[in-house]
Length: 125
Image (tube, rainbow, N blue to C red):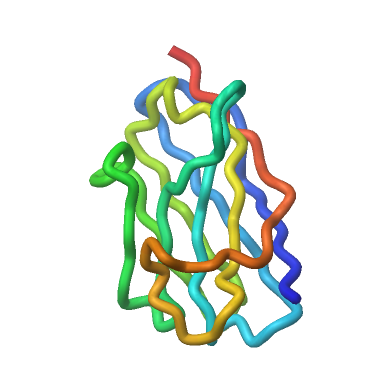
């Protein structure tokens, strides 16, 4: 089982930037894919971005392509989400998730087995 702890959320004006972090423990971090999801009030949780175990493959939702960047530092057991050009519609609770299998690439069929508690991102217009 993986324990995940997100940080870095906050209030920012439209057009601004934030960087979210997710620290992992409990499994060998460098062996599994990681993802970011978000859930806005009254909406279902949606995929934002993912990164493979080796950090080479990345996937993004169309709504964030070109604005968000996912990365990982295996030496620090941490995955990041750099969010630029933020829009009010990016307002949500952001969650990180860990692939329950090893050596996954983070593609759409990934089974996300562990979740963090979430961090709030609020973008004002």
